[in-house]
Structure formats: structure tokens, C-alpha cells
Image (cartoon, rainbow, N blue to C red; front, side):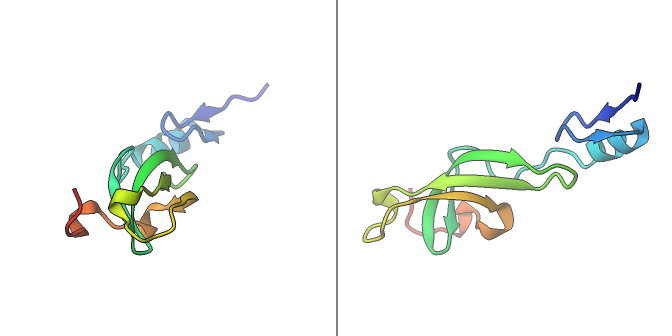
Length: 96
């Protein structure tokens, strides 16, 4: 029988407790929360889902657009995107 240790943050399994603890030490540090408004490719989007990537603890997000924040744009929702492709709301001007 094999014994595994699991990171409590990203659920990755390890053969040693030391590796699992090192993974947990990476922490849980998302840049954005659900319902945050951020910029993506020139459009204001609203974060709808967030997930953590195994091993790296990097975050990926899903989001949608609404008409009031994006006049004249085609509205869409987007698949998972890495957080470095998004810009924080404080870069926005004229958005509520």
C-alpha cells in the first residue's frame, strides 16, 4: 500500500509530506475575486468563476461582459484565462 500526502490548497498528491507542505507554502493568493470588474482585451469583464492550477497555485478565471460597461461591443463570455491576461479595475476610467 502506498501513502500519499495532499496539498490542502490545490489538491495535488505527493509521495512525501515535505513536498506537500512545500506546495502548501505557496499559499492561496488570487488577484481577483468573483464579481470583480477587470479589463480583458480592451473590454470591461466581470469575473464569474475562479480555479487554481495544480503545482503552481496560479489562478485562471472565467468572465462575462455586460452591455452597460461595453457600449457598442459584441457581448460574450470567455473560457478560462490566466490572470496575467487581465488588468485590475483601478486601471479603468469612467466605469462604475
